[in-house]
Length: 477
Ligand code: NAP
Image (cartoon, rainbow, N blue to C red; front, side, top):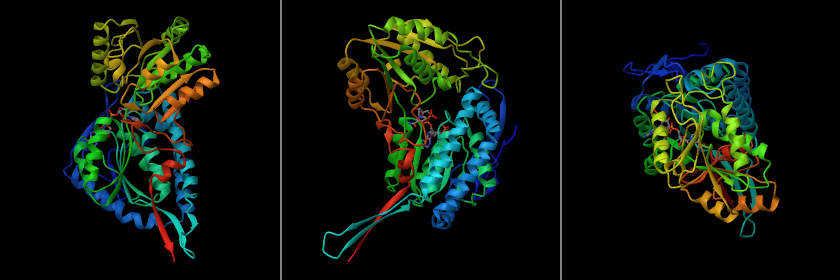
C-alpha cells in the first residue's frame, strides 16, 4: 500500500523502538494485519521531546510567512496524495472511502487556514494607566506540544492539532491512536517531503498509551497537552498535567441532542439526522445520540427516517456504494449490544437491526430503537455505533430540560423554521456547538469544542491557533 510506513518519526528520522518491539495494525473490515509499527515507551518519548525542544528555537523564530509556506506545501502534498491516504485511512479505520477522502481534504483546508492564520497573530497597544506609560501586548508560541489523538478520525484529529500548533510556532510530539497510527505516519512522511525541518513534528507509536502520556505530562519541556478522546482519559491527563502546570486543550466525549420541532423541514431534518447519526458508523463525538422529535410530527419523521436507514449499504469501506463500514473492534460491538439489551429489558422496541450484521467480524446492522427510557445507557452515554434512539416530546421547555440533562456539552442540533424558537432554544442549550438545520459542525473557520465534561479549549478558526500562544504584556514607562 502506498505511503505505508512501519517506523516512528523522531527528529526527522524513521526509527524503531529501542527494544525492537512492535504491534500490529489490523484492518477492521477484513481483520488482516496491515503492518507492524514500533511499540515505544518512555525512552523514545523523551527522545522525541528532546528533538521537539531543540527544534523549537529555530521554528518559533522563523517568520510566520515562512512557516505558512511550509504548511501550505504540506497541504499540497496531502492533496496530491488524497486517494492513497484515503485508502490507507479506510483500511485501518473502516469508514467508507468517500468519507475518508472528505476527511483528507478537510486536512488540506485546515493546513491552509492555519498557515494564513499564523500570519495574523497580532499584538495590541494600549495607552497605560499612568501618564506617559504604554502597554504592549504580544503573543508567543507556547513551546513543545504533546498531542494525543483518537482512532475515529485518524487524519483530521491529527491535523487539527498539528496545523495550529505549527502555525503558531510550536513544535509537536504526537501519539496517534494504537488502532490507527498508519495515516499519521503517512502524514509525517509527507510533512518531511514538504520541507518541515527535523524535530518540528515527531510521532511516537505505542500500544502502551499510559507510558507515553505520563512521559509527556511529567516533562517540563512540554508546555501544552492537546488531547482528543474520551472524557475518562481526558480527566487522567488533566490530573497528570497539573504537576507541571501544562496548558490543556481537551476535546472529549459528547451526548448530542438532535431536536426536531413541528415547523422543521422534515426532509432536511431526516437527511441531517441520517448524516449526524450514521456517518463513520456512528463513531463521531458529535453524532446525534438522542433524537427528540415533537409528538405531532413523530410518525412522519420516523417513517422517513426508517426508509432512509433501510437504504444504508453495509460493507468494506473500500467497496463501491458502501455507506456503513465496520466498527473499530469487537469491544465496540459488545458495548452497543449491552446498551441495546438493557434498553430492550426496560421496554424499548427495536424497529430495525439491533444485531451483528451477517457479514460477521465487526459489522453491525443499522439500528433504529424507540421507547427506551431516558434513564437507559442508550441515552445517558455516548452510543458510538450505528444505533439511532428516538424519543418524543411535547413542549419546547420540556425538550430543553431533557437535552441539557447530561454532564456532556459538545454538540447539539435543532431543526426548526421558527426563527424565534431557534434563538430561544439555541441560547438555552448548554453545549459548545449548536447546528441549526445543519449537521456538519466541523470546519476550519469555526471554534470546535465543548463545555462541561466535553472539554476545555477550542480547535479551529483563529481560536485554535491562539490556544497555542502565551500572551506577554510589556509596560513601557
Ligand atoms: P480514548 O480511549 O480516550 O483514547 C484516545 C487517545 O488517548 C488514544 O490515543 C489512546 O491510546 C490514548 N490514551 C488512552 N489512555 C491513555 C492514558 N492513560 N494516557 C495517555 N493517553 C491515553 O478514546 P477513544 O475511544 O480512542 O476515542 C473515542 C472518544 O473520543 C469518544 O469519547 C469521542 O467522543 C472522543 N472524541 C472527541 C472528539 C472531540 O473533538 N471532542 C473528537 C473525536 C473523538 P490508545 O489508542 O492506545 O488507546
